[in-house]
Length: 212
Image (cartoon, rainbow, N blue to C red; front, side):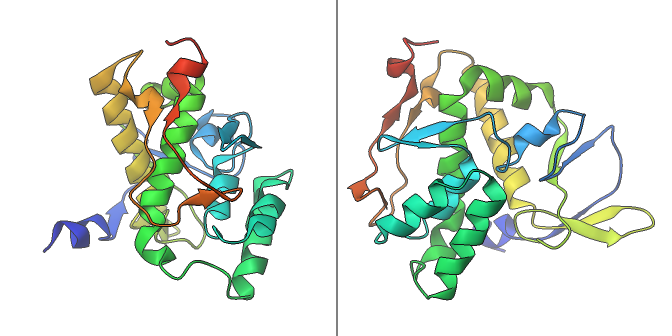
């Protein structure tokens, strides 16, 4: 099996809270909501555009040639509304044709931007999860999250790509430590990677914040 096939392979997780942390795209008092892309309180700034959530950034990158679509998505107050607007533009066949091939790289970049520009808050949240397996608890998304396979036992099944990317980021934090290279975010090697009619360049969050 190729490494790419393994990356996209579905798995099953048992409801063991001593090993797994299931986080949801809705608010929960356990503090895990911040792990989701839907969570406010982690603002981003890319190409001089301020974004409320990493979800809005991810959705906007589907339409590099449509500034008006990007600004509409980004301008929504809530992440759920940003998704709705993105789906509208997708229905008009405006999404970039290679999206399925690049979407994981785009998501990885979005999460890195979220971390770099919200270093203390987001790194602390990831660090607190220790060695737990992070699982996005989704009702229907088997790729980014994991759905309930056995509702009675609450076993989950899916690729859980968002959880995997977060765990990769957590591992990098633990290896690198504070004041590290994670504050510098290079754009992925993707053609026509633009926001607001500008190619996305390297983001240096450390320089803007006086270092960490």
